[in-house]
Image (cartoon, rainbow, N blue to C red; front, side, top):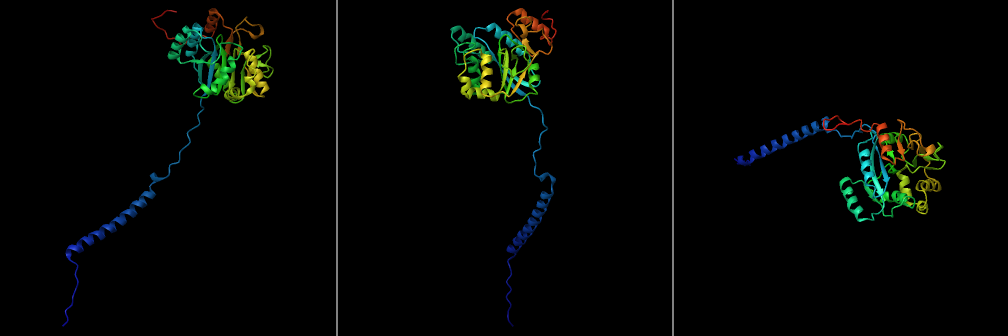
Length: 300
């Protein structure tokens, strides 16, 4: 009788193999189940960024008040006047602009103003009115400003500008190729006739950049500054969009013939405020201090 040989796996090896087999089987089942749940889960859908509702953003304006370094009292008054104003439609920055300082007193006191208010632009020029200062102002801005503005305004330091009225009048106007102000001659309503008065005229940013690059303004810097700006734009075939804000802009009553009229509620700017009594009249007419809170600390 032949003896049969049966090869048996040692029990110590059979049990671990069975365990590994079962673990592998459950792993496959679990993996399939997890993947099916994961793919079916609505939380795994791709996230498509939703467009935020369109909200109208404010545009921005730089108002450069051309003045002289020694006019400390006037700057103090204007800081008070513009510091309490704001606009619901525009972000407005007001800066004082003059040429290089020439006196030790100016260097000391203007330095204090800069440290305290940071609202002064000093141009590299000799102080003047009609010999290139306005060109230096506009042409320098693209190079010295940390940001661009939608509009840049040049204003005198004897003009009162109502910031809310200014921004409201600009809101519907173009942001490009715009020339805005009070057209000269005084009896004209056509903004294409001549030029905008130096009391306060405004240019869109593209025109400011053009002034800084074009040879036309650079070759015509001497003469009445507001008239020169009009000449630049005419020669360069610029400012196809123009707006003369009459009667909202005008000279103080009785100071300049047809350019003057009585104060009106629709005022954007009043010019030729040379005396304190004139400023007082304007501030009282527009009730500038109407938001003043009552207090036992003072009597008005």
